[in-house]
Length: 335
Image 1 (cartoon, rainbow, N blue to C red):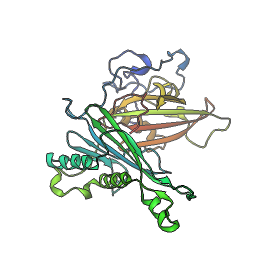
Image 2 (spheres, one colour):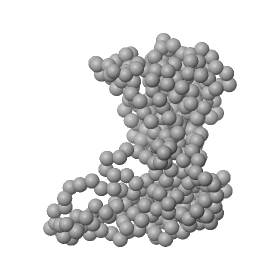
Image 3 (cartoon, rainbow, N blue to C red):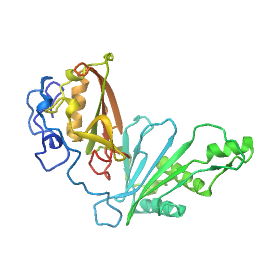
């Protein structure tokens, strides 16, 4: 593996050069000299908004080695993107640790009986067979107070596709009703979904000890999305300049990969490149030299750099892809 002083440049850069079969950029077998900031990005081809075909998320029973069973994400109105808890059909559970290890992703293996407990809890709701949305509604003539809420999102793989269910947590609405009278009609479905979300948010506390086949360990992702967003402005921010970093790419970082899309729409001034764990490690080592400490075992880390060439600033984000996710920039890497 290369050190921070000699990052790697001669990599298989599929999405820029279009000359390889994999759609994930990888590090080469041997290191070469670091790139300079004089790369003529204007001579590189401009990529089209296309990618190599990617396999869909396999559904349980499809014959694939593993697939998604459920992903549950709970968030209040001020929290950013987060991966929640993911259960895979091979029995792995992946979530973000909030303990002494900080915010890194961890995983643990269920026994077949433990996995069956989760499947039974999913089926017991009766609400995760088809996509839907459940929210309290204001009673006629009532004036609801304004406040934040907690919401839950579930993705469940079924034989006929992916089921997506969203629900608002009933807690804040119940509090309004207790203080102000019956302001809200709260669907019973929100209680069942909130209960499941609570269980999955602390899955180790929920399941018995004999539901687990092994201890908790760090989750090591195989692939990431490198997301680069440039903003032109007259003043430079007080950060390290983006071109000081010895990036392990054959182009200036503002030209890497493809346009980045979320929910079918291209994100303005953003580009995206799928990369391997090895290349993410090399990239983090190069950033460490200029004082940026990127932890690749966190689900998402972004840093801002000055951009003298712009002039302006560039945000460099690294989003972990979970094992069930297709490796593509077109989906935006959304959990």
